[in-house]
Amino acid sequence: MEFSVKSGSPEKQRSACIVVGVYEPRRLSAVAEQLDEISGGYISNLLRRGDLEGKSGQMLLLHQVPNILSERVLLVGCGKERELDERQYRQIISKTINTLNETGSMEAVCFLSELHVKGRDSYWKVRQAVEATQDCLYSFNCLKTRKEEPRRPLRKIVFNVPTRRELPIGERAITHGLGISAGIKECKDVANLPPNICNPAYLAEQANALAGQYEKISAEVVNEEKMQELGMGSYLAVGRGSINESLMSIIHYQGGSKDAAPIVLVGKGLTFDSGGISLKPGEAMDEMKYDMGGAAGVLGTMHALAELNLPINVIGVLAGCENMPDANAYRPGDILTTMSGQTVEVLNTDAEGRLVLCDALTYVERFEPELVIDVATLTGACVIALGAHATGLLSNHNPLAHELLNASEQSGDRAWRLPLWDDYQEQLESPFADFTNLGGRAAGTITAACFLARFTKKYHWAHLDIAGTAWRSGKNKGSTGRPVSMLTQFLINRCAVEQGE
Image (cartoon, rainbow, N blue to C red; front, side, top):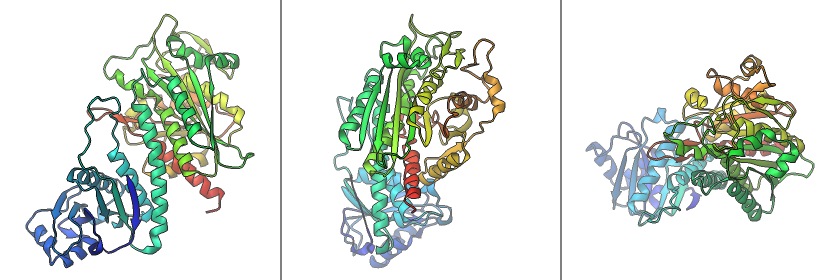
């Protein structure tokens, strides 16, 4: 897909299709008004006839509009002008792209990037349009024997900006949008693969492939033998019931100076989570292949980072593991010794993500990080609390939490902060070990983060619970590619601060 920006008047565009907005009720946007005037009132006459009301998402495709150079004009309903917000803008772009893809228009000039979205500039509108377009055009059909593709798919789209002065801004938005979209695609591709293909070894292969693709990236893999030497008893216990070896893949991106402390991203990589001895119910268990959504998100973010060539040092950790029931599997009642030396009583083998992450979080101390962010499909409780719209955010450092919330708002990949008070730590008390791996039904997302907090006292840390946001269920199930956009935005902001922008 080819993207570009230009600043031009609609009547001069010679294209397969020109896209303009119509507000409710039947009110032409400024660009649509220009086209209407040139066409001798052709568009306004159609609206008066009731062909289009202007409700959000309505589409009307016109052919051979008088005096217009473009073959087609697509009128897009944008709802009420004053109510056009970020969510609606993205939905309008998505519906537009799907419509264009079905019309046979292989190229288009889109003026929707000139719509007024409250508090948002041309950079935001163009970048969101690029990301929404790539999201719409994504398909995962590599394992299908019969692939259905549009006969004449959309291949080129030009976004218009109001003035020539904004062309550099628009070009930067396209660069960022494409880089982030490349990371999102990587995340989706890996997460959508079945667990008989995507196992911890496959994650390690992807880390090495990234190192082979980009000069600033190197990779290393920590195997079970090395984990044993390091005393990673908790991580090893979770993978004991699986024939697939647990492997922790480390991706180093060196974009900043050698002595600059790295930002570390740790992704939970449970390539399949059966629940272990505490076996999950059969319904929708196939979706447990997405329990490596955190690792997929970190891999995607590292890809986006390399595409954007950001001047920063980042280390991505893919904590690969598989949780299966077996004669060798760990059990409820077992007491595990973590890499930190702290002991954990296992109450439920399906609360396994934190047992893998806790050792990974101890391991990354060796990098003397500036900060650490872990990303995990950790708790069903987060889905109950926040649904599929917001990622749960918990942190031991207020400025870091605020930075992530700000990045989430900028990117449209939203998060919501939950408390990490010591009051909740009491729920993890154990009579036999230092603490348990389960805090009960109440505040499950918070107590899971409280567990991880016991292993992050040596650095600033944030936890992203993406259980509700990493994938969608139902007929169109699949990975969403979140939180690649939020994390990449966070890193872009970090670079801007460093460079004094």
